[in-house]
Image 1 (cartoon, one colour):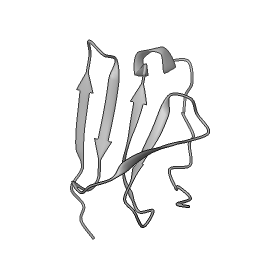
Image 2 (tube, one colour):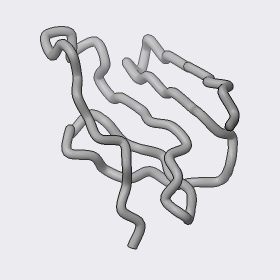
Image 3 (cartoon, one colour):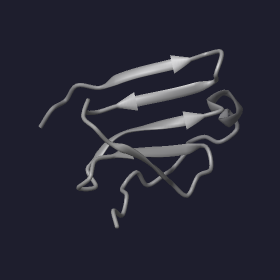
Image 4 (tube, rainbow, N blue to C red):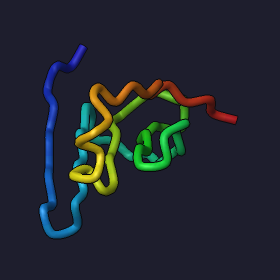
Length: 71
């Protein structure tokens, strides 16, 4: 199991991205409007992103299921 994590924050765009694997994938919505999960074709979670991260300060902790259903 790869234990490398890449974290990128764009202050101007107020966007946070966390990547667990650098492979081709696509974004899937979660139950939280600001959070997207990045998955591969088999449904493995490759990472996640948070839009408007600074606006979420009042939501502590943010609790989101990152597992995606691939159809």
